[in-house]
Image (cartoon, rainbow, N blue to C red; front, top):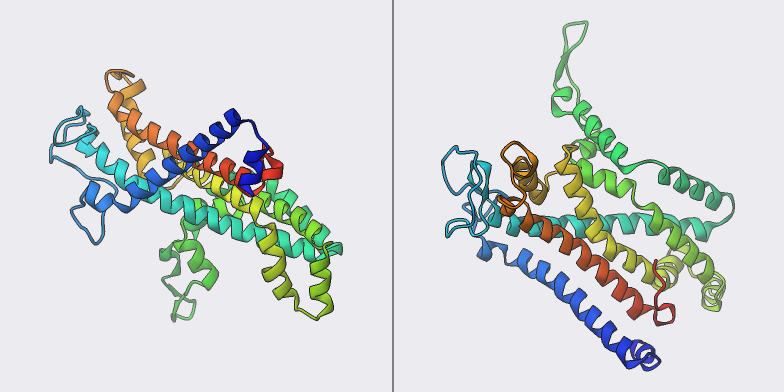
Length: 328
């Protein structure tokens, strides 16, 4: 498929496309290798339960220290090693991005597929609900779930004396346990980012439903579930894979943003940036004098987002040669 596309393009454009593909794969492969090799690149004090942060000194000094043999990329205040958090933050970010994008894509694809396959009033209602979710800002959702977790904190389900003097143990329900234990950033991003997937899946399924092989499957008595999983979703998956690949970088960027501004989350990269921010713009701060407190982490965030977006574009071109240049 890709060969047919390249055969119709000028050699200069073909070479550029190949270099773009190599660059995208190389950037993403770099982050994957760093994430896997984190225990060897930055050995943790507790190998079984590694932390994302490491203090290289017991000094209580709040001054950031420049790169040295003990701290390859320097430290932020209180001697937190930037290199260590950079490496382990890569593993954390990759796991977060992959899992959040996968859950979001799965939820949106199922909703969009079921809506389009059922059709009629059900389809109309689900699409209107999708539109309503699109109007709800993600930042408000994160604030909502953070407050909800505090309201459903474990101490809310302790022994409660009744008016008759009998002690009653209030146990949380299954839904309450899920909300309490879930990461509010993950929960908010999944529940309020599935809509584009639903719309793409909905459009794809409406087209696939008209094909002859779907009619043939219905004629021979195939069940709806089998038709959806074996015939519809595999043929509608290409644009969903493209969007999910791009969302890996977007999810990590959002996590870092919310952590940095204090809305929750535990991004190691953003936490290091937050600790070093006052040495950039605060009293006595210097953008060039303390470059190590922001430049390495910022570059990792930029290249992480760029790499996965770039890879999504290349997957789009590779899997949809007739739609070269069309972005989902």
